[in-house]
Length: 465
Image (cartoon, rainbow, N blue to C red; front, side, top):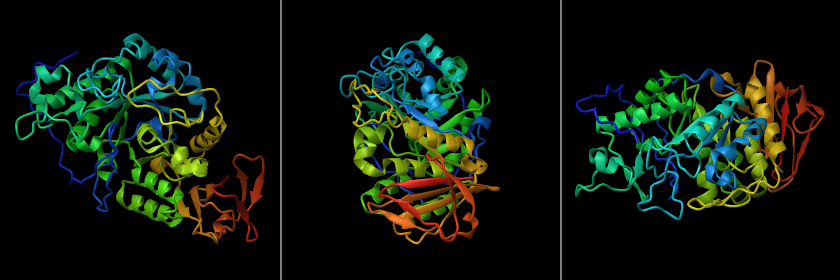
């Protein structure tokens, strides 16, 4: 462990203060909290994205459960397949040693960090992690680490060596945030604590050449820390930063934020509690609140949702493919979680060993086809590099959401039947009187005033030119 001992009397230079919005994020492991949404717009200085990020998608790796071995070495064999799937950023859930004090379950939570400079021996060592990153880069993949800045394990050496780094309650005792009893909360009012955390983040970029971070419960950490961290990390190399948070203010430091609200809209639509009109309202609100070049991450599942809320099949049933396709066609970046391409039919244990069954890759072609279109068609690029969007009117908008993405003369049209009934619809837009190719089918379709598209329950068509 590398402890900072020469930081006394240092002062961090703070960036300007942003209008603070009360955004909470989804809990990392022990409880789930819906992220509140803000209707308040705020001026944000947009972060500059790495040049390579304009047309990429992201894949979340649960190292413990990904293979029977649960190691970096075993994971390496999957890298060519993950790249072929059409994803470009590998987000590794935390790889650090896990605390033993107040541990949950047998193996504990990845988010209880015992050593910010160490590697969980279950996964491997420094040499095997370096090999993994090097192999990922050779495959054309970027690697970001899950970073837990808000709290540490109770038996992290900092607790005894630097107790001033931690928040105290009214009795002067350290405490766990929320009901996360296996971790203890940091105090970001202490400059030396901030410097320690920044130095640890620099270490993994300098020593292992990682490409950035997914930052756990980013909304619980002061925004000026993230602003300073992004500035300092970019001096080493252009990094990619994902915030587990939702709100425009995070885009001064982060390339991408979670699309929790849209995730919940999809869940509600399948349960009959929302309508396609809610998607249009959401996208318009997103445009009004967020800087033009903001990346939003959309997903039908992730580690929290899978373990605590249920698999995508439990929540979205027959709509799994339609909702993922929708999340890839709207402006944003789609996420694939470990096992979706298998497909993963179970809730993975969070604190125990529970390997993914890779007997087949039944859904791999589906994800590959969608993500290849995402990365190759300029209308679907990320942020301002992508095309505009508009809802396409149909004669059954109560059940169908149709969207046009357009950049120049290049177009992608998605038509989604978000109901359990078969529908046949016309696309009422003069701009679509064109000849299109059909994704997943070796056929073309010419849309005119007589064209009717038949869609079985929870199905979709994607057209492009």
